[in-house]
Image (tube, rainbow, N blue to C red; front, top):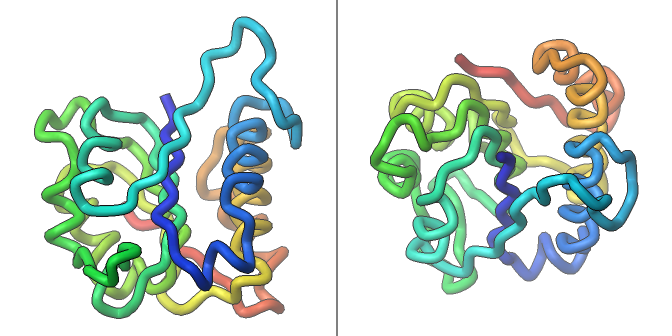
Length: 181
């Protein structure tokens, strides 16, 4: 089951409307385009907000096959609303203890996740594939990139093809994510 987690950030939230974005993303992942509600008989995708490390740990403990993390991140790691951070090893320690409950794919929609240790620590902790950017992501395109990726992924079931499509569509806007294994 996919899990979409938002870590609030004043700058990110003011520009991106995270609740609407996560609702659209859930509908896309379920294969229902930009629908805003879950059709009857379809298992809903979990959408959570994590205000702290403890809340993030709780949100992750039941496991997920796909984890989408929408948050503010710096060169030092994830930034929580109280301005504390979680670097790569900190993040890996929040993943479920049982390997079978760890995500098979983590999509870090956070700045610097491929270069600040978050992505590598997730891989070292047993996550099979990680999608993450090396650099800062322009806020005006951060939600569209993820939606483009997941639309293509639902269509093709190929992470590589979906990544190629989204990177090509957004390259002129300075956005490039990487698939790490």
